[in-house]
Image (cartoon, rainbow, N blue to C red):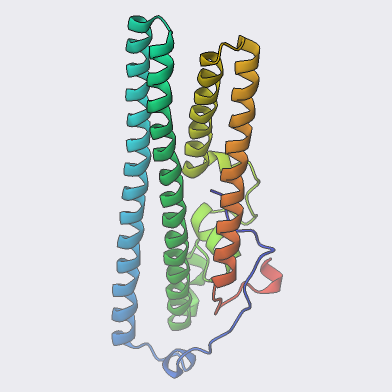
Length: 239
């Protein structure tokens, strides 16, 4: 849900280039292998995007269907006990679907970061083969967290926390937290509480749910930073 922070970096281990690269001898076989791996990583990223969008679409579709079903039941039950019971059965299912959607998209984002790191390493190898082409590259050639951010978001600076809610996992987390708040509010109404009490409890549950999603995101990013193996770190003058 959040992007990796530059402050949390794994220990860097620089691997010297192969002799063919260091001597400037262009190896057609090496270039062919690198190109094949390049397209393989691009294909893996494309599959990840497809699955992430499919997951988000499934959640939104389920939520839309639940809202329509609740509207129909409310007309038939006149917001009575039948409506409350139906809502408390349906909304937790939608919330669960949102939780697993956020969790899976977080996994996809971690996988995507690994593929971007691989592409940055391949780009580094391209520039070792042909250093004169460096002015024509716009993505990063470094495989640390800052290099991943540059290649993914096309920006030099670490994104602000607002980026978390612009990205797909943050969007799903906010909508899913609204579902949790709505379920809590309906449950409060079912206990014959007044409207203000239902709104207060619903707002509290919304905040708590969003806080849990944020904590999950921070923990996931920290785990990714700990396992990140950096071979070509960004030079200090570029940070």
